[in-house]
Length: 423
Ligand code: EPZ
Image (cartoon, rainbow, N blue to C red):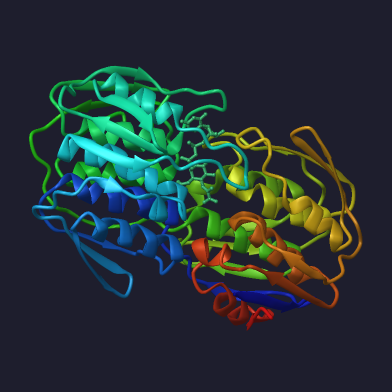
């Protein structure tokens, strides 16, 4: 296993290119299963989760070819419909093959994804959406067994206890594209990744109205064709580099980030005192530390609210920002595993229910820390960049799931960081 070693204390400066969005690529690759024709998907990041998704597609008998960041998917004539436990258990997002398989093959068996370190991850809304379209669904022997012979359009409200669901919206929308009749999804998620998927489906010939709103209307068609698509840049990776500028008092230009996808984060950081502007030339963003930042309270919410996938990284910044901030998690109330590791580095953070009370300290000190999930790992990297001395972020296979070439990109910005084998 690898670890990331960081000698903290350097200001990060320069420019960085943001990779394609992991959470857009995964459902888009699954959507290619809706057609018999070839799809070409560009701007795919080289990440462990992508490799898992390609393995899943190959497992169905689909031909897949990768040339740099371009993936060609040739589903022609694939007949398999089982996503087995050994693949699904390594990546929860594999559940997004359920909708496409059901629509295309009229049956699907997908291993039940189970919980994960960030808390319970139910799939009741996925099942509700597909049942509303007439699918017969049972859970047996750890598998979701779905029969789609009687599927037709239907109306469904997909709002859950914690708001809308990204992948339940994706699954229901993908299934609805290929079945008879009209489907209306109310309380649909409208994260930029869902919008990117919708745009890809429309390129494939799907008839979808209400793109980027909470009400999607899908008119089923008989057939979808292959399509070519370039995936949007990753707003969470971009946000993490903005925070790297803030935490190291640096100046980073994000070459191709889309500011409209990061309104909540930009708003909070600007209010805190970070200088964030459209990059020279009108494309991308420049984040520049100019003055001491102020503490900020945040609450995570579905898009366009503050993203849960930025909560841990934001906490690292608040940990070294003078004053008190309150960080409340409304999507995954248990997503706070990073607190104990940050406190090992000298932060002063107390957990009260689903809120973290962060008292900013002057300095963090480097320490060996253990990454527990993808975004928590990114938070520890940010803490390591500002800490005094050496930080060893262990188990960075989590980071490799979501941050392409992280040490290369950070080094280019001036960080003293390298990868080592864990002993
Ligand atoms: C997506 O997960 C992302 N993953 C997550 O990214 C992200 O944290 C999450 O959306 C929220 O933005 C991918 O896109 C691959 P949800 P998803 O269904 O779709 C509850 C990362 O680090 N819920 O939108 O699985 C759920 O428990 C990650 O890249 C139900 O109650 O999340 C949560 O409280 C991890 N029933 C809320 O909805 C359901 O059937 C939102 O989850 C489904 C979800």
